[in-house]
Amino acid sequence: MIAAIRVLRRHMIVFQRTMAANAMYNCIEPLLYLSAMGFGIGAYISELDGISYMQFIATGMIASSAMFAASFECTYGSFTRMHFQKAFHAMLAAPVTVWDIALGEILYGAVKSVFFSSLILLLVTVLGQVSSWWALIIPLFLVLPGIAFALGALCFTGYITNIDYINYYITLGVTPLYLFSGIFFPVNTLPGWLQAVSAINPLYHTVEICRALALGRLDEALWLSLTVLAAYVVLLTPFVVRLWKKKLIV
Image 1 (cartoon, rainbow, N blue to C red):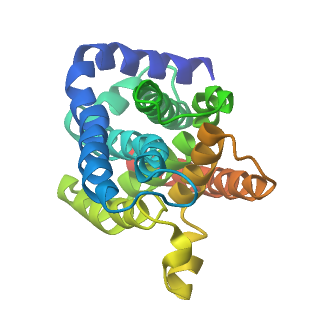
Image 2: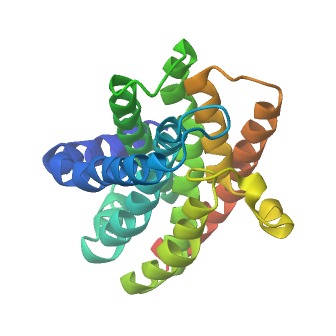
């Protein structure tokens, strides 16, 4: 665990130098979506699910920022460190195991996930889109989906051999999760089979919990969302370790 923290510390030092560039995608882009969709479509939809359309989207953007931050860092970032910078191979020359490296990557993806989604939470709070003190728990909760999204991305990164293949993960994986997660419209308006697919969408469950905390709409169904996210963490962790051992120890 100590070695994994050192791996995380190394990444955080690098992150300090590239924070501004990272913020462009992880903060500015969600705000552009929020402005365009909120003011554009919001002009035609006065209220959705009992709240304004701007508020509906804003609470979903907190969750989507968590997914994008972890997914991009643990695909493009991890692949670059593994294949181009050879950072992991250098680490293995020290008393560091593959598990330490993988855990450091998972923690780094989760830290970036919580950091940027918390910034979005702060911004939408300033804009008056958050109405409950339960929102203070959101950064703590986002550790769980941050780890889950990091694990999903690291599984894919551990499998591929060409950085261009990440386009498959983003287009066929991350984008559908984003569009059918209940950020822009309630998933109960979808056809039955798409609702069933959304039920296993980790971003959908992240959105549900962020929205509930931001608006103070807590109910027992949120425990199911927490369980689904925890299940992803439990199921994906062994795959990450196995794939990365094959990739780094050959």
